[in-house]
Length: 376
Image (cartoon, rainbow, N blue to C red; front, side, top):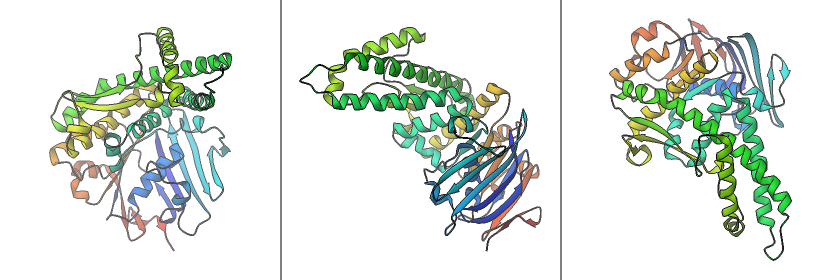
């Protein structure tokens, strides 16, 4: 999978940007705050409809503009296609081959993108909600079923919490209605848990080896921390999870909130059995997140035979020469890769020779000696 041509209008600091991308490696070089990361972000928005930096859509539009557009002419194993994201003051539209897509769950499975950036460190240092969101984004790109399950789960969780808040402790509650809520909530919860568990198992098939190649350290593992026990089959898990809810009904009435389910899941990196969020250095955490992204590339390719687009924002700045060289084989493995850097000398010369270079300076971009963006 790749983007052949990218066009931006009124996006961030670009009035207009129109570039052809190499199917291999593309390197954007320039000082900080010149717009390199904005290009990576625009590709992420094109694929997933929102920024990975948790920025509101209105803030993606160039200052003073009423709208912003991102267009990608793309290719995949099933042929060529076009994607458009249109941002405006009053909302957002997404299009596939010029037809508006109403359901985002269907749109975000079209173009598969993985990103490594300084924000990835938040996966380890932030709270469980950030980690769940990151995992959800990746699984959703390969499974419309997962995205729909998340949406339905959120709706039933909201209804269940509202019901718990409204129970009058002095009267009998509507048991029939609550049983229906529980049945739907349990089914969706277990489905999501099994899909997350399967994904983490696949990650761990690759993670330790990749981390060892990058750092020389062994035994990195990503752990799925579910607040109920996942059994071997869904029927048994659903039955035991429902019993857990029944046993804790009085507690939930007291606290007026659902205490168990995938909305309270967490994920953690263990290195030699120790939690990286507590014992890991900044370098170890950064390398763990890079290893996770490279593992996800292999999982995506295994899933449907098509590689995702890999976005690497300033990935080489904190790696020594040996570590940089160790990750090159993953970058060159038939994966369209887009890299930003402030210093091209940090990147292996052999990789540079095989790459398309974009120079970004003072609000302009030059590729192959030609200016490809215009800022008034």
